[in-house]
Length: 314
Image 1 (cartoon, one colour):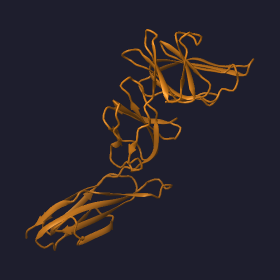
Image 2: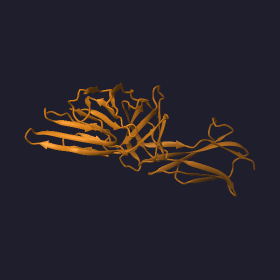
Image 3: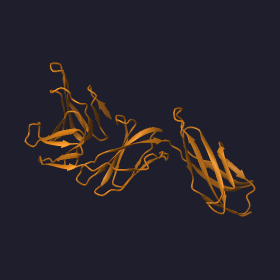
């Protein structure tokens, strides 16, 4: 969920977060704004439009801190177990203080690429955020029922977080995942073009700098079977996918690397029966050319089954 404020600032709330808007004012006397958001549970991302007037204020409160900015991109999170409040700056600069106001002696500056953690006792620790992770093969079409993203391993990382949105500004959030391994799975989502943001999680609790990639989701699965029948060997195929689908059947003799003895493409039916296969070992596979159901997307993708061995003994 994303809230867009009057001045264009945006507040994104991931799942399982509890946030209160404690102040949302437009002061006519000074023509300034006064926004304040309180986090009771979970985390938010603030993308704050530049505040031009001296009296403009944007603050985020947690049970132990208050932070303020004048135009930046940063994250605020409250750890459910320890109660520690994390402030992590992606762009710009954030000012963080313990207690109820920003005049506290513990006030510190948190520039881009760094974070501050404040415990329930008021102790503040600063840290450099981990660099953006590298997503492996980010341009591949996500065609399986469940989406899968692989991340290049890196030292000093205990996990990764991944967020998917339908827009580059991550206003329309679709889903997210978090895990300790370098492979993150996402349940199925509708076909379309999306953006994915991935961050590394450090042992000290900080979430690192983000890397953002664009990708295409086009569900397209294919499977096949071969069996002997009264009139020969019947090759059958099936699969899921929206839009036009054309199949291709390849049969090779003796080896997976030999030249196909049968290579039929552009098939719209779901089966072929061959009655004249001589005795021997064969390797066969089925491919699918999947077109999108979106008229504005002319790009097609190709999928293949693994080779299967078939021994013919008449």
